[in-house]
Length: 289
Image 1 (tube, one colour):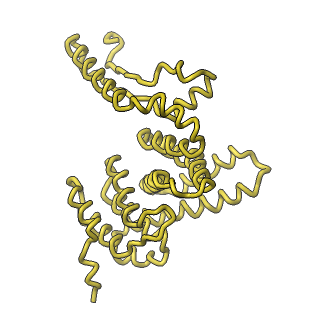
Image 2 (cartoon, one colour):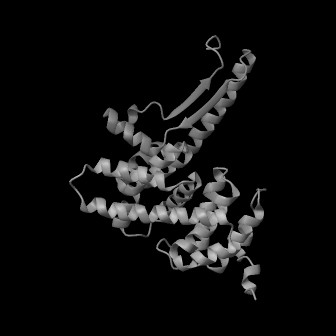
Image 3 (cartoon, helix red, strand yellow):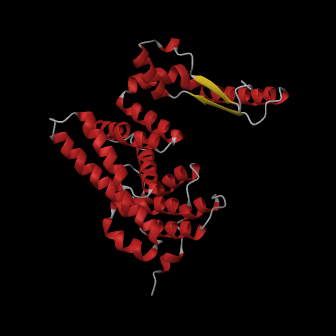
């Protein structure tokens, strides 16, 4: 006879699902929420329950418009990651592909940890070569790109909740993020995730420089975003009036870590950063230019 708890979501999971927009295969998401609710563990290294972490990872993947299976995998992943004895339960209760994604992400973590430890002991090989080799190995292990998305979402939530951890652990996780995970996000073309990983990692690795740049730019971030949106809107109107059709107008604000890298590369002061905001216009033909 099945445990009666299997039929119930925790209040937290139920509330999360109530605010979930329409999505394909909602039964996969519900099953994962039930699984995470039943096996929720509050004793994790980052002051988050496994359920809270899983739902936060799912939110990251939802923002990337990921599919239902990887979102379901994100919800259940922390419970299994911290309690490997639940692997059999995963096979019994969750979709086969969901379980494969979870186990692929765990395998990536095992290989990463083992190779990173070996690299620390072996200082005869160039450090950058070791990092490049491990990054390639992580890509090779992940025969489904969604496995990498799962690990990237985990890493972002981990960084966001490192505040109470010891400084050595903060810096280790942050450096790993810059060495491996942010480049993986870049390789997949997920700039939105890449800059978040970089900024959070930079916050722990160089807090003084982070605060200096943050004070110079981040205070005005909302104003900067609004300025970009207004500029895009005005440019679209001008292009339309000028008879230029199918033009693509986009904008971006430069983020803290990218500003830091430019300062270091160009050997310039913050006051000399003039491209913190940028707008790009792509037109169909050279004549339109």
